[in-house]
Length: 199
Image (cartoon, rainbow, N blue to C red):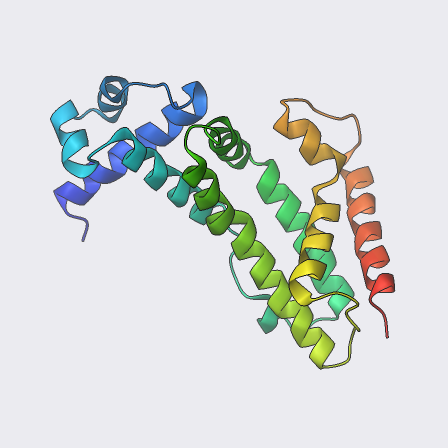
C-alpha cells in the first residue's frame, strides 16, 4: 500500500519530470511545487536540492524507458530475435519522453556532467550490457562468431539501429520515410551485422 508521503514524492517527480523536459534545468522549485500541488516545503522535505531532484528524475525516466525482459530467455533464431529487438529499441528511443530525457541530460552536460553519466548508466549502458550478454551466449553456442568483444559488437548494432529517423527526432525533425521503409532499414542492418559476425 502506498503511503501518503510516497504518493507526494511521486507527484513531485511526475511534475518535475514534465517541467524539466519542457523548460530545462532553469525551472524553479516554486513552479514544480505548484504543478505537483504540494507546498514548496514538501518538495524540499523529499529532495534537499534541485540537483537531487533532477538526478532522481533522470534516473527514474531512464529506468522507465529501459527495454524489459531478458534476451537470453528467447529461444527463437538469432535473426528473428535481433530484428524484433532493434525495432523495439528504436521505437522506445523515439518516444517523446525518451527524446525529452536525452535532451534534458545533454542540456546540462556542461554544468552537471554527473547527470549525463547517470543517463548513460541507466539507459544506454544497461541496454548495451543486455544485448552483449545475449550475443556472447550466441557466440558460445557457435551460432555466430563475434569478431569484436561482445560489448563492442552490441554497441555496433545499437548504433546501426539508431538510424536517420532517430537523429532527426533528437533535433525535433521528422523524416519522410514510411514505417515500412524504416523497418526494411532496420532488418537490413541486422542482416549486415550477422553477415559480419558469421561462422
